[in-house]
Amino acid sequence: MEKKPDTASALKDIISHAKEYGFVFPSSEIYDGLQAVYDYGQNGVELKNNLKNVWYKAMTMLNDNVVGLDAAIFMHPLTWKASGHVDSFNDPMIDNKDSKKRYRADTLLEERAAALEDEGKADEAKALMQAMAKGLDAGDLESVRQLIIDQNIKCPVSGTANWTEVRQFNLMFSTQVGAVSEDASLIYLRPETAQGIFVNFLNVQKTGRMKVPFGIAQIGKAFRNEIVARNFIFRMREFEQMEMQFFVRPGTEMEWYNKWKETRMKFHQAIGLPADSLKFHDHDKLAHYANAAVDIEYKFPFGFKEMEGIHSRTDFDLKAHQELSKKKQQYFDPEINQNYIPYVVETSVGADRLFLAILCNAYTDETTGEGESLKQRVYLNIHPALAPTKVAVLPLVKKDGLAEKAQEITNQLKFAFNTTYDDGGAIGKRYTRQDLIGTPYCVVVDYQTMEDQTVTVRDRNTMSQERISIADLKEKLGYAVSMERIFEKLV
RNA sequence: GCGAAAGUAGCUCAGCUGGUAGAGCGCGACCUUGCCAAGGUCGAGGUCGCGGGUUCGAACCCCGUCUUUCGCUCCA
Image (cartoon, rainbow, N blue to C red):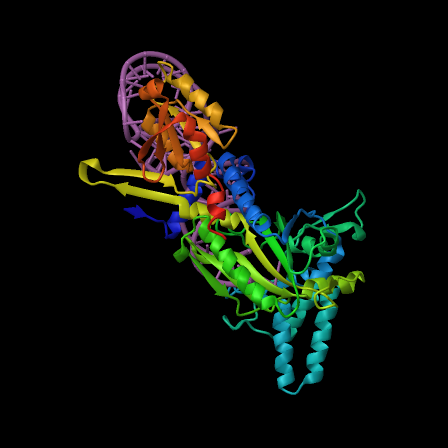
């Protein structure tokens, strides 16, 4: 009998567990924390690194035509002009005090202008749009609010015109480069990692002698000044993306889009997420850069939410960079003897979201037996290749040389994979400690070990034990905890 | 940003109409034991989220603030 968390309170259990067992801590907690920022603890960092590793290797090792990149977080400010982020990440917002609804101030005015045009007042509409543009360009938000009031625009929900001030929400973080603060030195922390790949497209293509189709994979931090951050590490201000941009010949993008859709879904299942907790969600409204977009959603305790996005980005980005930089972003395709700007299929998964999905899926509150023999335990059912600690070596008792023997085995295994030694407290308690952090195997040194050089290996999920020879440990456990087991499911 | 709830030991919580803090679990040492959170002894750990105010006296009442969760809202 297993109880899987699917209610909102389940998230609380997972957050508590994550903190109590060293996976995720609130940032700068001794100062009361910082909203929507979290730190990964001693076990969290292992799990996250394993996840990043398995993703990166699945991309680069398993695909001959995908290579890696690690671009800087700081980029030339024009990058964000070209990508559209400067324009689309700055929204003037206004709230209605009665309905508590928030609107984009520019949208309200645009709708009003459209209504005026329908009424045949095209001149008035044009004047309104010009006045709005003037106000926005000058950063005069009060004048924008005044326009809304002058036009007597009412909230469709409350029907009142009881508006707050207009406030600018900038989703990009900015900072200064250099000691002197001037306008020219203002730069942004990247709101996505993709642009680092696009601006390096030709560098990689030329120095790596890459032929289209090929991909560039990158893992890195990105930053967004979210207005509302919710759901633990699901939406953070500082987060990590694992992105791969795949450059293809125009016209073939849908073929690759579909191929990557399937490949990525397979990946999530291979690392242990159940098929019925995953689904595709097609975008109805496409972003300015895409001609097809789908999310892979995972069934979090707070519902099916986006974990990964697969977008057909067309040539939007490379073309925009070519126009703004005046540097050609073309590829010469020898097969068809033609120059073109490649189209791009992007796969972009949130490392933190994937981490959270793994944690939610792994958290198991299990009750076995009934009556007197009723047993309850909590364990993390993490894929062995992803588990922070692979093996715990435990002496059944500390005396009679068992502890020394267990230390010796630990020293043999620790070069091959994360191995821990524990002799504190009763054996049952030590099993439980390992269950709680998702260690897949416990090796126990008992009295028989001293006679025939065998140990028992206890499986986390089944709690069953198998006796094997010490000499075979490294090989047998090594394979059981290897990423190979994940990769085998991907080909 | 709005509304609701919450914040006391590492965790889960108790603490009555105000009288300067407790339990269980966990943690550490030692003893005993030895295969699924065993028992015993001893011990560490909290200016009750933070800052004001009321009061002779505040974990408790009032105000502010921070953080978290939930519901709105937002999400190129």
